[in-house]
Image (cartoon, rainbow, N blue to C red; front, side, top):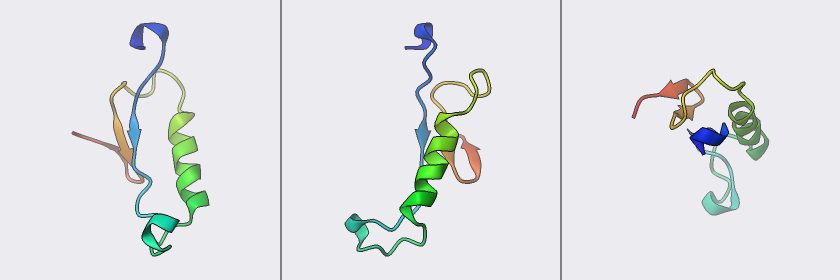
Length: 61
């Protein structure tokens, strides 16, 4: 995928209120979705492929 211009990254939106946790997470699913959309729409060249993000930004692994 790298040779075709794709980047593959991981994003953790945090503990989100969903059916899986009986809606006990402090974050609404719309907030988690906004975070994922923001990471997915970063311009090419700004981040290396294989990166991991949470709300604080780029994290080392």
